Length: 232
Ligand code: C5P
Image (cartoon, rainbow, N blue to C red; front, side, top):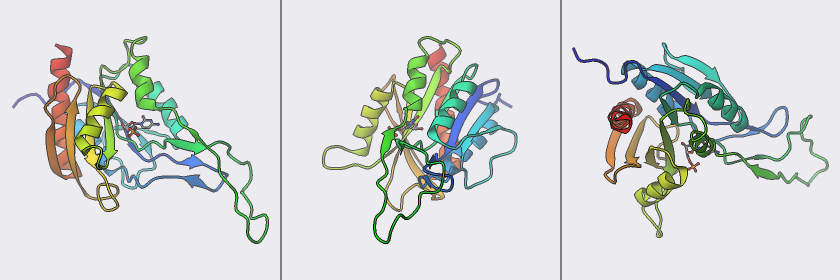
């Protein structure tokens, strides 16, 4: 029997969707179910890795045999990622992180003031956790050597899903980007997925589709191959 492909590796995975609080009972959220991230955790565990899963509001149970950490908002997720990333070999940022959060969290429930008016909610940008981690790496050699981003893209007249993916890979500065095409009925909350894996150090992309676990196995195998040649 051959050695599992990630035996001895430490892999940190974020999964699910963040919730950005508005008041004590309301939040802004997204449709991420966490299925793909959970499948990645399962595939990494099956490949022999020591897995830490940072879960933001999973709709599916976390797999057995992984260390589980919980976070809710983007700011909490950022804290959990920075706390858990040192000493890891691989970081897979699969969580759907809200780009914006309400500028203020009200201490009490936002009320209907009169019959007709509605509040205007001011939003501010959230930090880009992935990009922050990539840049923090130059100061801290303990941070993961191999960082993987995910991108939900739609193609349009200006460019294909792959072109947008390549541009995002450069912008984020990570080693690998997994791109999936999204739409109202594609990917989010679905059982199956169709992806392209893009690499920072060469132009050839790898395509895979199937169940989220099948896709996760392909991603983990690609990480294992690429991380080995990256370290060499
Ligand atoms: O820029 P975009 O949101 O498409 O990038 C997606 C990738 O960046 C995912 O890997 C996601 O986890 C990560 N991300 C992040 N912090 C944000 C937004 C996205 O780490 N605020």
